[in-house]
Length: 164
Image (tube, rainbow, N blue to C red; front, side):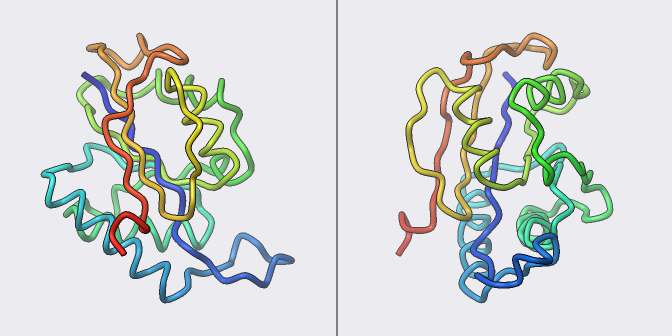
């Protein structure tokens, strides 16, 4: 089985759109990322690989998750196109190129792209994707190159409002 866990960055400041890539998390965003990452840890979920958008808010979110999940921050892979808007087809191709020894891969990004990725990979996805949404998609394959669109099954969905 292969699992991709797609995370929308946590809540960010609602200004500085002229320098969007530098927008930072709010205090609530930091708290939400800590809360959701702790829930993952309680469920014994760990990362074999973490890939993230290079935007500041995504970096801050991924660093909180990595710290909680004991993933080495220096091993986080930053993918510029996760910020600028990788198409769902290109996202699937990125997953298909992953090393097969990696079974659980986290990907941190932005809306609307993360919604499109979830919708493209899952058989039936119509849920909202609020900030810090964390959705695990399971594929019944032994190799990443064998995953196909709309073949994933939702293995987990965590959003901050579930824990308030």
